[in-house]
Length: 252
Image (cartoon, rainbow, N blue to C red; front, side, top):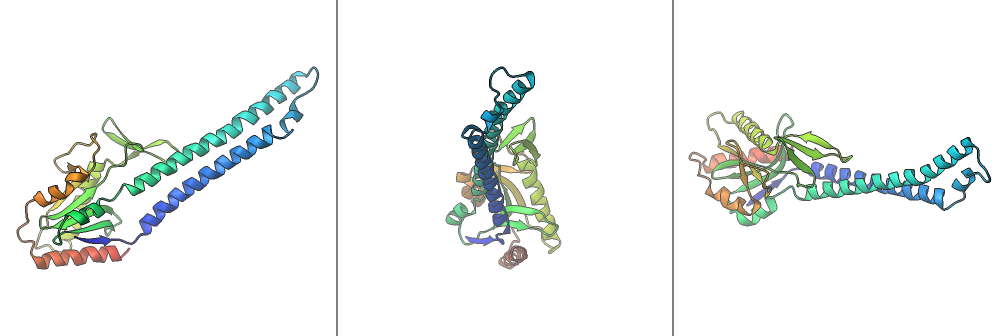
């Protein structure tokens, strides 16, 4: 199977985001350790502890100083550990995105896969596969550790550990398929290529809809080969589609 990989700017941006998160985590933890040493490993805090019978103001200052010495370094460390967890989740999310390498080993030369295409207008297509059946737009679901499905609404854990709304994966894949269909129509109005949408996941929370299938990664190659062949998708039209996909990939 042929594979078209778009320019790696997205991968670089993903790596930079993970690197920024990891750097922030390291700085927070370093700040926590330094503050902890400064407060507990030096006479600094003891200078706020009055001797003898302290006044009310001296007592308040002493308690405040000890609270600062305990809570502030601990807070920096906790925030640092939270950022580490976020960086690990983000790295895992980036690694788990693509199924194309597996497909490349399972499908024959009459199939082509493309990743991270950006259509005119800015819509990013995660993955698509061209075959005798037409086109299939493949969507993905973030790992369960960084996403959740609450009452029909999808949320993803943001950079600060907060849950923020995200586009529902099945709806996104269906809309991506519509956009691909519309994009192809602008180039060839005499022939309508079939465009399917599918989510590739083992996540049991995800159920298929009339406009989007749900396929386990291990079953994807078989599912693609089982799709009906589209009549009229001649070798000439197929080559035209390949060139069109290549031109979009090269334009990034």
